[in-house]
Image (cartoon, rainbow, N blue to C red; front, side, top):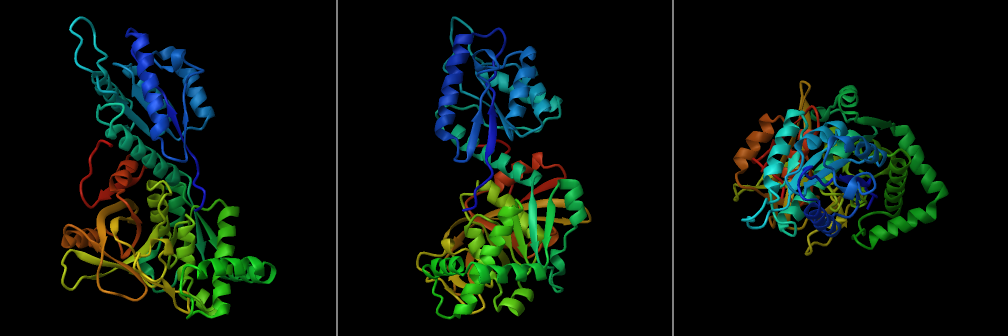
Length: 464
């Protein structure tokens, strides 16, 4: 899998100036110890132990030092767990100073103390969230819950995924390999608008340069090419594919991977209809699958917005699941709420159904059914300058056999889904991943200026 860019989360425990420090420190230690156990892989935590007394923020005078440390460590997100009532002013101010995704949560208090003051943690989070809104700071929230409970564990993991989507969105480069094929008018994108509004850069790689790079790999690195071809052949029945086409496929994968790594590319949009068959004898479908299995979201048919969709969905999955790029094609003839997700062969082999025997045509088109399980599909799209992010969740189920790569996708009410896709407006292309990510993608949009969330079903406003 492609190495995901590290996500850095600043952890700033909060307390009130006049509340008990001993109790606050106990809470802080409980929280930090819990975070050490539940923080997802690839996420780095930064605390404030060295810049605030007892590692807790409680008053305005501490803000400058805390801000300096967090910015020095280039934090991508900020978690402000409340150790007691907290200080809503510093929460609001620090959130406005950092301009990154913010998470608020507090440990659930025990039964009331009849002889003294309680921590009143929930009371404080309610004040802090209002203050964040006063400052115009978007934030995420986990219900007041036990430090060792499931809500904090899931909520914090989901927040990390949200922050990862935002990070991917704000620093994205898409490799456009070749040109858009003439028939695919539905995939046009506004390159200038993507750059000026969202800082999403399209890096073009012309057809002549692509073929030259592949031929250079074949001429100078044939042992490496053969090793990649053999690795693929160990997983897929390649009996229908000539040796020449197997080597061309492997060389193309190597050339694209090299371009991705050399140019800090996040996703790829590939023209696969005319150039590759004409020059290499393959359509490049399983190259897309191979790249996806390596953690490089890749879209067919030069679909730039489809590649962006894949990058965002991959970030929501924290890079733990390979993406697949799909057409929405056929409604099941007998099951009204089941739809065929299909494409001519680009799905990653790692997602094949356990009963499938993956194969490939001579033109490089994969042939297998994908596994069952929860699936999220999404589409980042635009019309008339309005950008939206559609997401919806269903289930991969068994169904009638089909050529190419496919999975039958069962949802709650397909007619409502079809209406949403038609008038969204979206198209037949979607990025897909196993798992449930609609809430994460929707939550991320509050931090993505200019993108409106459009989930198929309403999602909770709280995480966890």
